[in-house]
Length: 187
Image (tube, rainbow, N blue to C red; front, side, top):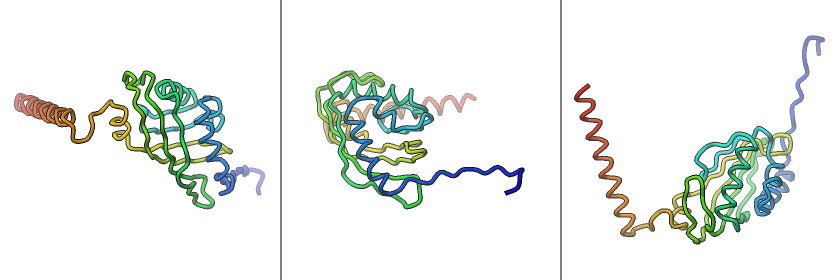
């Protein structure tokens, strides 16, 4: 190496064994309902996209806000590993399937829903990327519509309420189209 060339240290990707040990620690941290246990497994500059939160999270402060809001709304929330983790050898990434359950007994803010006392049970998946022994990027995916129906914030499939909601949406769409048509005709 010449005097003018800087050597760059390349971090080794985590081993499959490390990831298999990490995933249960991750779920245990969530099940503890202690924000510090979850946050210690995340990098300071963590990026998180979770289907249940209205914005992408950047940094631990955003994740703390999310955790506190979620655990306030569903204080008995728990997760269990269903499948995985799935690992690509030599890559700092893994995914796994989980099941989450809990009862909606506290306010859900955002978006501002009142507690319904109803239980939810849904399968989902985590897609994690690691750096320096912690998660640096996280994508959490699951069917929000199923959760919304279970919690009573959306009407049941095929119900009279669902049909009324669909009719309202169709009427609102017709009004919007007519408004746009008239604006473009004037302009």
